[in-house]
Amino acid sequence: MTHVFIVNEQTMKVHLKYLFAGTGSSNDAPFLFDAEYINPRKKSEGVTSSAERNLAAMIADVSRIRIGDKIIFYLQANNNNPGMFFGIFEAASEAFYQPNSNDYLTEELGKSLNLRILIRPNKVYPKGLSEHEALDSLIAVQHPSDMCWSLIYRKLKGNRGCTMITDKESKRLELLLSAKNNDKYLNTNFFSFKDNTIVASNIENTYVGMGNNLDILPRLFYKEIKKNKCESHLQAYIVQNIDKEPLKSLLLENIDNLWIGNEVSCGVGMQRIDVATMQTTKKSVIINIIELKCVEAYNEIIDNQIPWYIEWMRNYILPTFPSKAVIINPVIIAKKFNDQLALQSFKEHCDTLYRANSRTFKVNPISLITYKVETNDIYFKKEY
Image 1 (cartoon, rainbow, N blue to C red):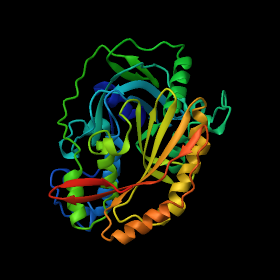
Image 2 (cartoon, helix red, strand yellow):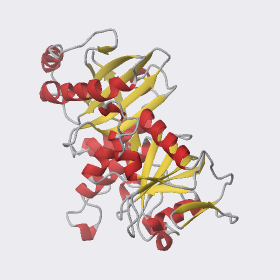
Image 3 (cartoon, rainbow, N blue to C red):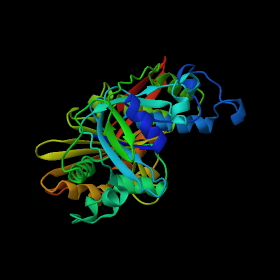
Image 4 (spheres, rainbow, N blue to C red):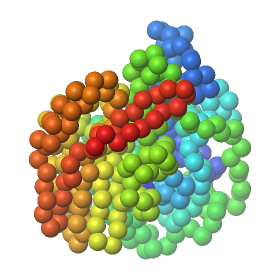
């Protein structure tokens, strides 16, 4: 799959010089080292609860990246130059945390990017693709689903320093980049940035930062015990571990051709799917729509959220797979019910959700997976 990192002219130069990509916050993340870190009320005293939730959401963003995934940079508009897409690189490491307080590149970057991955060249084209060419042009657009909605939504909402795009969106960007450069890419392992163009460099610079892992589980455990808000932490954990047991067996057919998305925008409002996966086989596409709750599941999820997500998938994702059957699995991951009667009542409400079943489109019954935390671990159970 492909991820787009948002950069400015200065950070672009540093990313190319040391071959890494990054996002993050000016806040450090002490909770990654001290699971029992107590959030202060004032920003001046440390990382507040809201700042931590924001960091946890960013951790989820970079945690979906797997080694070998493609990386494209989006250079924001500057000096009367339009926004431009540059690439193509690929992830050469898992995501890691580089504390702001121990970052030897702070001065060069001019900003804090404490969540990073190392990258290597895939097909690095010298010329960038303008935002207009990538997002506004209707050349070869036959249906609204052909447009790059992942990036259009990102622009409308003005956030997400690391955004995933669908495989079809990625293929379109790659074809446009190739055409812009007459299919000529740089045959080198070292790069610099000059006159709004990626150029080959004869200077090798090695990234020598001290990376730390992004294991969010200890903090999630602590937050659950204290009954604090932790949905962003749960999302980060799910994205980090969805292709590992036990989640792999609960959610995935296999891990081949796996696309993972988090905070997947599905409308110009604030509608976002917490986690989505796509697995493509020769004949079908299997999609999981996963709604996360750090409380017991409740009826509004069934009445409003999941039907909206299914409708969006039907209108914008189904047409991108004209020769395959699309199978959608709605999934809720929520806290374990304390009352079995409440669990049974919720199951009966799940059964009221409309389910489609045609030759090209199928919506399966809702699956409910509950979780509980104890003895410093998290346990999942498929209820139905």
